[in-house]
Image 1 (cartoon, helix red, strand yellow):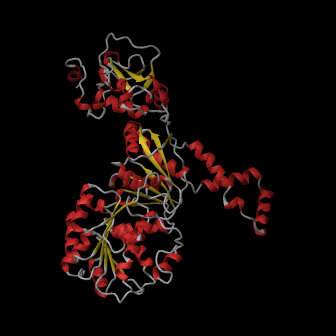
Image 2 (tube, one colour):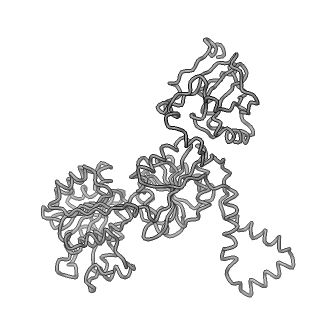
Image 3 (cartoon, rainbow, N blue to C red):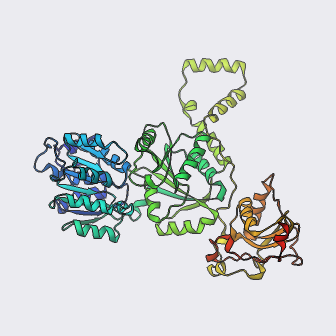
Length: 577
């Protein structure tokens, strides 16, 4: 592909990287109408923005020459929201400007500022950094802004979300008034538009609409799991989808530490990436993924923007993203550069409605299913073994001689079994998962009005199946601890529980008939439970019981249990203390 004259040094760099077809954003920024103007560009992650603005500023910093002058005060400044993105941009621009003799210097938090200052003093054509560190160098005089011809704000919406507005304004005010300002953002909220109006002049606006393009190379799946089996579902997904590189997202640092430890214990080659790690630790984790020493990265949303990992074919959302934008940024780590990718949302039963709204808001259609079972993974392992190079590659004479020697000592079945055992010894064991029932048409097709109405004194209005628990009033049975225990053992949600009747020596509960069979199967799997749950053969009589129905009101679903009111016999709990 020819963006610039054939003899231009950037053209040579692009050719060596096999850049044959420009992306939409790259074509747009090189339009003659956009030449030498301020640009306000909205384009999704993974659209080739780094190369786009690297080419866009080339005409500004090269001028009429095809060779850059000796490095001195920087000519272009690139501002990125995170260390990882800044370092990635540094790498991209370094190869792009290699044959032009371009000197690119990075300035990011977590690195030695004195070493950065020494590199700046030696001279640079382009400086890439994070807002806080760049401001620090400007204030200390290490970064000279007087010769800047172009300033690029990459992922500007993310920088504002992270609270860098004051730093950005300081940087822009410290640069020459006649500079070019290129503002790139995945979205254009009011704050971004206001920033553009204040610091750009006659900006050329470019909107690369993603439409279906943003999801064209990504297959979205939504996987229903029991709330206490999220980690096991991650294990099975990683075993079922053998991606060269996989990224697993959690919402908190603690969740990252926990899941990372679980995966390492299971035998996965995994690294962690979160904001609490030092820059050196984060660089080492990313390098382990790039050179193949690790296959899985467990990360917070610090990795959702700007991280470009090779062969990343799988993204797993172990916890639901906070909003549609984060979902798209996370998923956008895969399905890049023409590769196909898979994005899987793990959805606890009680979070299904929220997940559906999240997907709908993002304009994404996902395929709903349960998590891969251990049986399905076992069958897939068999197919993979038959296609393994150990089986398919041509055998040498030495291999055949050893095989004949083995056949003289052992039967073919024994040798084959040993091969299977050797193959499995390097694979993490699949987990036995409870099937939550991904397709529950009776529940999904109910009228919305019916779901939101209280059940009244009849509980589930004849739609319930009764079960008994071997604890009652004499053992301080109370809905405040019974309900979480029932949900945990039966793999259900609070909304699936109807009437609760507490007797002296037992408690009787009503479970929605549409999931009663699944509930019975789940509690039957528990061998040593302090509280046993078993089906009742006949519906209970109301005499001698106390309790009231669990109301299925939308606004009560998320209330703390302590705010619910239950009918209790006066003095009953006090007497048993």
